[in-house]
Length: 278
Image (cartoon, rainbow, N blue to C red):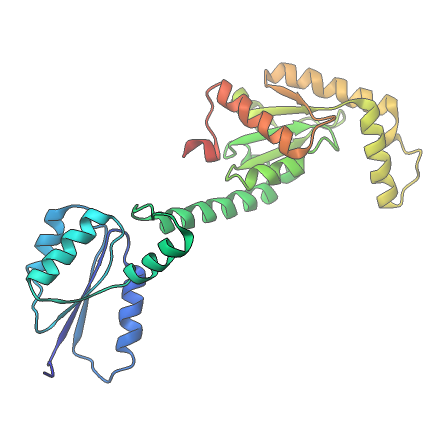
């Protein structure tokens, strides 16, 4: 029987955006304009479902649903059958195939894809933050950061900032140079947010010499001399003691190991950052 109007009920225990897109894509294939799409999102209580169904008519209503919580899906299916409504479960077929192929049960938890999307965007935001506030470019970022790394040149500040950013942690870093006063904003940051990085001077000589070669400079540059490196380390050590911040030695540690130590320090002092919040 040809109908004069259609009502699409988009029902979901999450946002329901996917089901609405499917409905609109299907409708675009028909020269029919007299329709209404209602989206019922975050349906988590039986009362919500029952109230929504009071407006559904067997002749003119089509229900598209993406319900992953078993109890709510079963209630909706039962009510649909009793009311003789037309409905399409957009998740069931694929979920059944996946369950069979993967030999595991689905989590049955609403909104997981939205949570994944939120994690992705937090990670992108943290990476952009690390780039913007790398190497002391803009001291205004120090108060906004979850963690502030300080240390002399070639103590892994930038690699650590980027690694932690991939853990959804916003990191700013500040290079310490004896001839350049640190930004005043650094002294306004809570000590538990600051992590000092130090290293073995003789290992640092080799690292800096390789850096000099890569830049095409002379091998005997002051940048890689033991006297200069010790001067920088002593200056940095004095500043870190003044700030009262934790200090880790990155000499023989991979970036991943240093990052784990930083996160452990934060846990021990009760300061929660990035991924630790959720």
